Length: 344
Picture 1 (spheres, rainbow, N blue to C red):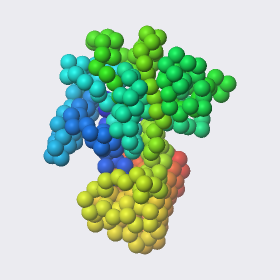
Picture 2: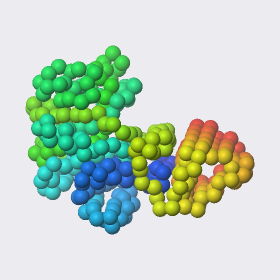
Picture 3: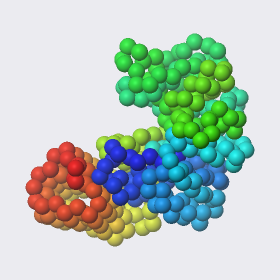
Picture 4: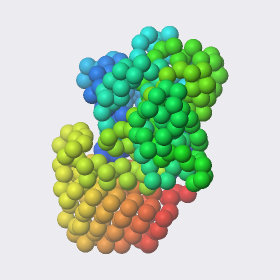
């Protein structure tokens, strides 16, 4: 599913759809695709909306690796279940559905195995959080008709609740936006209507008594709807790169817990960052905890910390960026910028 506009990632998504925002040199949609392929998926359809033509070109490149990949462009937004429901005639067996704008690296095959072994119609990947108040939480039971046990990390789904207040939270596991589904569930998705998996379809199936299972994933999952989460995902992947290996673009290297694209030169300070093709860090400059997508030399005296920089940005010597997001092709005069989005 890759139809969202990604308004919270502006200005980066002014020029690209949210799933094409890059992380460590690759569009974020590639991380979910890789997890599905590792589980044995060979046929992949990407449902698109906003700036779908960019996704169509990218998805076509997947076919060079032996996949059968294609794009289904929505004429109007159909919601998560509605967009997949457009493909109901093509879904003849168990299907994996995932969000193309989340960074996921975990064993999807284990989720498929749990789905089949528990006779489920729906199986949901879960993620454990400290504060569930901004998410949709899931209540689990050891049996299909049992009581909710907030300590369970896998089990049969018995209850949902969106954005609970602290006193309402009966669990701290949330919907991670990746599902294993049987084709008959789409009989309950209205044709031609906007319809949502988590808010409409799953509560309906639960009320009908259909077996729904869920399992907390062991790996990484990030909803990269905010620039800060994009940086958190980058940091997690860099810190855990030995246990969660991820593909690098051709010619990339890892230096100072950072990924450098082919040809990137670093003479200044660098730590826990990504520098895309055409970037460089001059002597007397510093880049820490940041993501520079490409084409941005960092001149002397610049300090970039905890920031996301789009492509082909021109920085003046002495520019200081802290927790900023800069869109493509911007030109910044020397100065200090703190927690800003440029342009606004």
